[in-house]
Image (tube, rainbow, N blue to C red; front, side, top):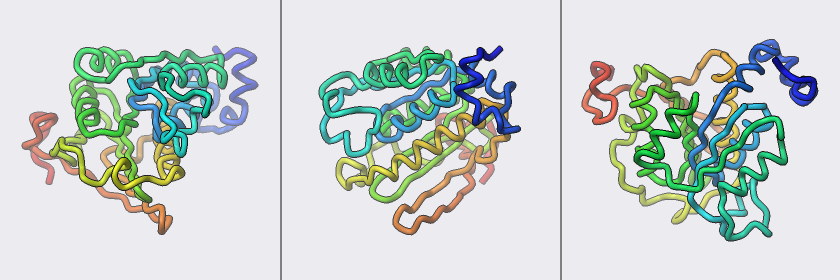
Length: 253
């Protein structure tokens, strides 16, 4: 049941027939893991908290640096050199005291990653390195949890939605090479609103999924060109030779 405070706080989205009290109760009962609290994770965390997702695990082992502030809107200048996970928890608590944010100031890998993924209903990969993305993908495949992955560099962004039983493959089918690409935000730069767009859409897809709406982007890669304000959509195909999910399905190429 929703409290009187919850009805008032979420009144605008309760008016949506796709959400309503039933969908809001699903959001309230849900647990989400956000891996990475930078340019993608910042808007994603804020919108999930504002929407009333009941429990949000906030995972990041970094401290805030001044170069982050150009795009990581969760933080303020006086927060420099403090734990991003702890700062995010504080901001989320201030935004919505009706939900439970949990700070995980550690790198998501090995047993810690599996334990976190096991606890949640879905995962948002907002990380900034290939090793973490592949580890998160593998954990989600192993534990059969939906994964919403985002990335951005320069004026370009990508959004990938993967859901069990992963009939269209996984992140490793799309990017089998786990080495860091030469062009990333540290070497090529990134415009703040571009990561904001992708992180916001990760939150949107998560809210829709948790509230019980159809998952129209499952198995699809969305490409955003910020210079042209254009989108392209590609259908992911499972690779029967994929080391992560290849044993689940025949080759659908």
